[in-house]
Every structure is written in structure tokens, then in C-alpha cells.
Length: 254
Image (cartoon, rainbow, N blue to C red; front, side, top):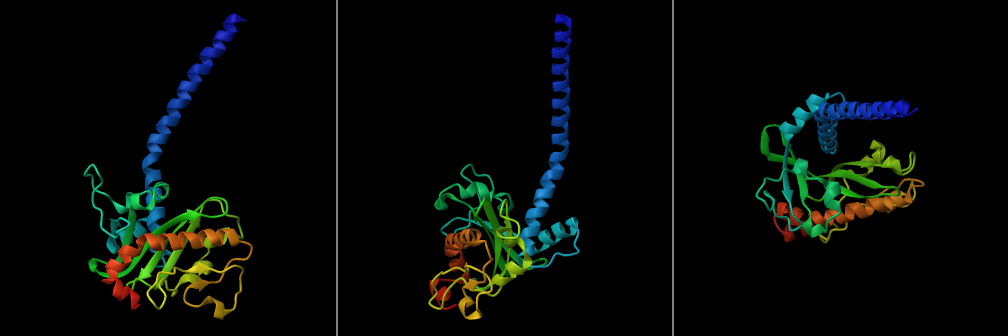
């Protein structure tokens, strides 16, 4: 019996070591593929805020991104940040928005993705800003593209982790996202008011106006989280928006 127990123990230890080694090797082997998959998904979301990528392969999307996106990182004062405290370069695509979200706004880094004509970084067509917040059950996030007037929304892309299918999860649907196109984030006096999703669906057009979009039936809490996310992040980017616009007076004239 003792010999049998020793055999079982030795067999279990050896099996654990072998399986652990195989899992470790698989993790190392798959890591580059996982990294590229995440990179592709992120760049696809950024581009989708401004262009239709239907029919493009993964490699074509990455090539388009490299040819038509220039990125910078700014702080809450709207100043471009090129290096961290250790002097290492800061790359917008590597800024972890979710991790930054846990910091105080004045300590965060804010990526900006400039969509321009292929090969001509001076010919900017729109500015894409990442946003992050909380929905009903978990994180929601997205990318908001502004026209060069820095006031009009060109397009949006939203994603979520665990919102309810058919309800809050509808923020990922193109029909819902298209409602934001053409809306303004500044009012006629130049005050930042953001854009908000109304409660309920099929609201009459007079209620929509320049700063409101139709809501989603049964998804009030998700919509509230989305509204807070947009208002917060437009506020975080406001200083940069004003600098791109030229000055405060120019923004007020939009």
C-alpha cells in the first residue's frame, strides 16, 4: 500500500511538472499572436470611428492605420507629453486607458489619434479621442472622432465588457452609434455641454437637437454611464481641444 501511495505521489508530481511546462511553452508561443490580435482590435476600433473597414483584411487594416493615423499623448492641460518620468518615450497606442482610469484625472495620460490623408500628416481630417467609463455591469469604452472644427462629432465606436444583450449591449450596434454623428459638444456660447443619450427610445425630434441622441429602451443605467463617460472625457480633453482650435475665443465662436 505504501509503495502504491508513493507511486501516485511521484506520478502526480511528474504530471504536474510536465503539464506546467507545456502550458508555459504554449503561453510563450501564443503571446506574440495574442499581442498582435489585441493591437489589431484596438486599431480597428480607432479607424472604425472615421471610416468603414468592411472587406479589409487584418493586414490591410494595420497598413491603413500606419498610413493614416498619427498619434500623440497629452495631459489634462492639453500639453503634449513625449517622455515619462524616467525619460522613456510615451507611445499613445501603448497607453492603458483602463489602468489610467484608476488614477486622478490630473495624473492620467490622454492619447489623441489624428486621422489624416495617407502620407500627409499635415492634412488632418479628424481627431479621435478614447473614452472609458462604467455601464450597468462593468466597463464601457470607446473612441469619439471630432471634425476639425473640434465641435462636431464625425463618428463613434463603443464597446463593453458585460452589458445586457439586447439592452445596454446595443451601444455596440452601428444604428445606435450613428445617432451621434453631427452632434455638437459645445453650445452656441462656446460652453462645453457634451452630448447625452436621452431616456427611452423613439423620442420626438424636437427633443434631440444638437446635443442629444435617442436612447435605448430598457437600458437607462448603461445610457447614464455612457453620458457620464462622454461628459467627463470631453472635459479632460477640453484644454487640448481649445489649443487645437487656436484659442478660447475661437472655441466660443463655434
